[in-house]
Image (cartoon, rainbow, N blue to C red):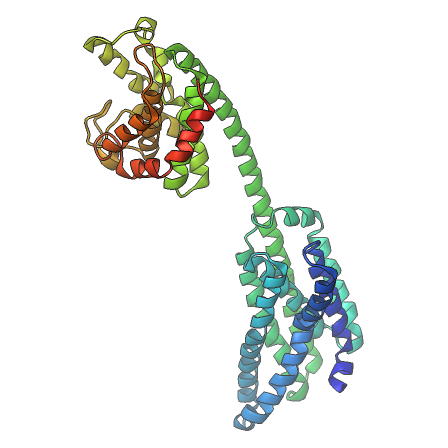
Length: 436
């Protein structure tokens, strides 16, 4: 009971911690669940855990370790400080795990939030000269923290994944160790040192205040850097969207001239997206290659109409001219310097290369061929086989599928063919959905 009464000011921030935590999980729990969780959150709050840890550590230290350090004040201080820091770190492990489970956000986020409350409690304990002033100091520290981040509160809430929480958490953890050391130093000064206590206390307070100010500045810097990165990403998205629109328009013109339909563009793009999602590790690359694939035949704009629109088979000479469209595509797209334009250029230039090295225009083989071109090559040929052209009727889907599989390791990359075969039902669904 004495323990409860002695530390009563620290239980008020514990109640605030419970309220703050439930603000982060609105609508997630029922009323009865919230009652139970309120009790759990109260007992895992930083002040309550600290009170229990202080009581147990003092008893444990006095019973088991104090006798080994009586002879030397310096030895006593060193052992006591190391013990308290290690004990406090261990004491907060289970509360941190429980808090992360309750909030349901990434561990780095919840741990940073939790440590913020730990540091506020430590700050108030060190700075306040009496129990009565603890709440005043705690409130002042909390107000200053809100002022520092006032303009970023909405941004932080809406961009949790953009912030570098691990960096802030590392800083907070180091500050936690420093403040624990300072708290132990105050204990040492009050009970061991007999002279100049006021000067030493002011010195400790100054260290803590300056360190907390640096922590707040570091946290604010992290938000600022995140904002700048977000601005760059938004700009790149807008730039990407404008280039995507240009690519779609350019591809439509190209297909119109080649006698193929706009649905061919859509189908190849959709096939490419399905294959790329199984092969590429980056979702951004999947979206990029899906859009860039629309430009695979842009070089046909440079081929004479009488050859492109010829209803019958091409002569060997005419075929050699048509083959130049891949080189033309490379030239037409070489002036753009964005990632999507570079991918589109690789596809346009290499999508007629063969895995066995017998393709054109460069005679590349194996993985010398861009993975983007490897993917589009399969998507393009399958759609060409199953589509009607002025010089041929469409192949049955099963026959076209078999042909793609036969060309595994010859015309096409083995892994792309394997994915094609595995995802064939999705591809066929797209073909039927976007028929000419």
